Image: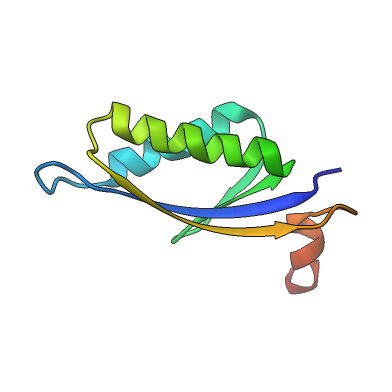
Length: 96
């Protein structure tokens, strides 16, 4: 069972003020390619998995932004860590 939920909002700087959506799409692609469970919401994406793995995914996301030409990136991150288990479904089941 996963031990962490990590939500991230990635904010890449663009060189000429162009739209950041292609960058955000690429960041979400990095998450999708990782194989972890994730949920995209309007302002952030939440991942479920082992904390070490999720932090590496964030690193990969930031690297992908730089590779696309962003000179710098802000990543706003929230972490829920529970060694006994962490689940997006469990935390939100009463709202469905």
